Length: 319
Image 1: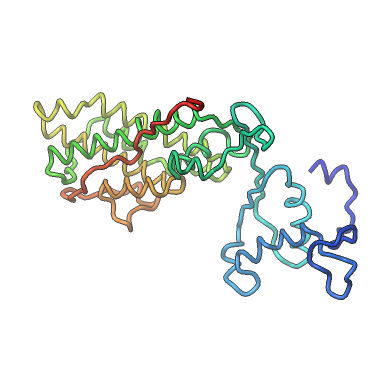
Image 2: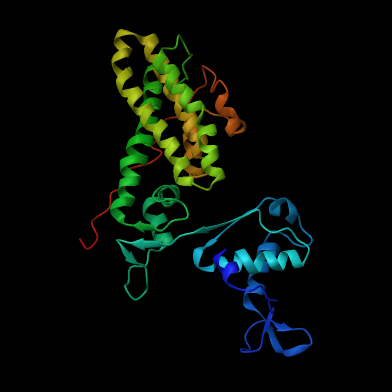
């Protein structure tokens, strides 16, 4: 907006004569197409324009771009589209930059973070989770392996994966591997289930604002509530004193995990799918609309539990 307020709007030339590289303008060898005109049109052609089913992809689209090229996407690109009689993006969102250990990432400093190396070390879903949850989406963020390990081990492995493993292992050992039937619910049961089944409504305004870290924070809060519930109920003690209550606690924990896994699908699709498989959730019952449902029916035989988020053991840098 400051650019538009400071500058008089003028016609934008779509060709250049000061260099020769680029696509030549038909009928004039002295002119080449301005590189941004050539580049920006790839948004359309990648979606299938003009002959494919591009309108279904284009309608209501949000363009996510680097903040250093915002002018080209927010001023030049809409002007080009409007001149061609095409609808501009519904929303343009500029993301920030990452630093590493407090320093700007650059080849000269030798501190470049290679995404494939992160995926190879931590796994693609853990990497996605860290990048989306660590800083406000759109702001600048700092990467450190210490923070990455804290995310992988401190939360994903210890809080999410461990709860799923403990719950499913107890079902396997004490309930013949079948999902338990729900019994009489306590206020603690209902409190956790209400929070878990309300996650879609809690996350929606954050996702609409592209505040993805806040959406993930809503799920994290339920994860921590579920861990506190499980530890307080102590089903490993109830199996001797009150087996029926043990089954109810496991059923409530599994239902909370089902809701958590469904909400994690856009952020960690592979890990969420593995959780849902272990919880016995059918493929056709994994949408957000299923959160308010009754969950997995009693008596469903579950697969053998396996870790969803194994702990990452990594040597210190320079060791």
